[in-house]
Length: 93
Figure 1 (cartoon, rainbow, N blue to C red):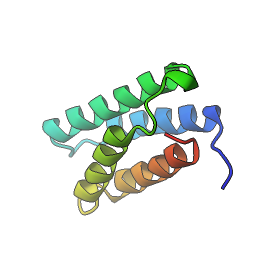
Figure 2 (tube, rainbow, N blue to C red; figure 1 turned 60 degrees about the horizontal axis):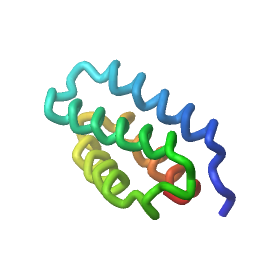
Figure 3 (cartoon, helix red, strand yellow; figure 1 turned 30 degrees about the vertical axis):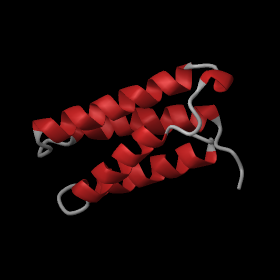
């Protein structure tokens, strides 16, 4: 499987932030948790590759949990999270 390009991850991350900002019915706790996870991933992407924890299972697991939680009420956000998780996997994160 081909590795995801850094630009793809950054673009996808920006899209997730936009969807998060536009999710009006998202409860504050879920919004904060998702924001925190995305911030953790941004921090990982800024670190030199050799300094990154391998793999970043905590953030990925939290994203997967959020995707399941959002499935019924926020299917578009859940799908975007799953696509981002896939990109992270292809990037080795």
